[in-house]
Image (tube, rainbow, N blue to C red; front, side, top):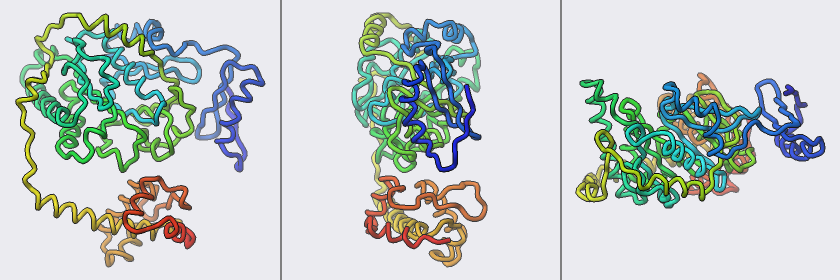
Length: 440
């Protein structure tokens, strides 16, 4: 391993782009470039990695066997292999919730299947249960397994809403048991709620969003843990408070906005794909190679476990027949909803105007916004400054005075921000003109 420094004018993207050619010419089995605070860590080796990334092979390693037999890991999760060949294993229960994101073919779905397979092979249904939700039916290969709370992966929004209501009731029941009978609580199995492409279930659905958020916030007190996956998420389309999801796995992303939404930092946009990921473990970012499992391997495991009987003394069971008896609440507050929509529309219009104003400056403050738009009302100015931060327009979240305006031209803006501005009458030409006025 070598710590290297690059000249100020050298772009890191060019260094990464030349890595395969350098690796080939030097005849190296491994060559990794890792960005550090004070330079680049260059990892080079003539020998291959300590482990291959086949998931079933990784489960036979001494490290993983020790993790699953050790009470320190309630649900052992193989995250991946690091740059020097070490196997990285974490406890899913300690997360307590996990957000996985990336673009198409980045292998985020394989990461989900590895989590499910690990639970099937190492934990009985009396220890760990699964509630699977997947609008694309990609997880339907795990249907009818004894670990499942619902007999198959939930695919429609109505069934999802009903299942989340049942899960929330179960959470309340478990918390009550915990407060009154700790010995009984210890017998309850861990429940993992895994929702693939979760935004397809909660998009525009207030009940689904609020119920899922409640479970995410308080479920860890009832042995309920949530794993969400999202396709190229941004702060705008996450549609849920990320606070209960301190742990993130960012596979290859389309741009730095997606990476920031998943792990709080850019970098995943530079990944090579094929299962390469950035893992955010409560502040630390690790560059890893994720494990891989084939569809044939998943199918063989499914056939092995499908016929096994299950003891339902302590586990949760949700049947389609039971969900049919649940009636979802109707939204009778039409006038309130209309008022709320009108208020949101007015705020969005203000935000678009302030964004255009910000593009013409290098820095901006809440007081500057207040003076120009809200007759000196600092609190209103601060609210809209935070909204600019949420859209990735300003940085320095903890700054007490001015904050830097991040984009310097039209191409620096995310597609979501450009669409947002277009909805309020600002064309690409108008946005570029605003940037051309950029001053102090």
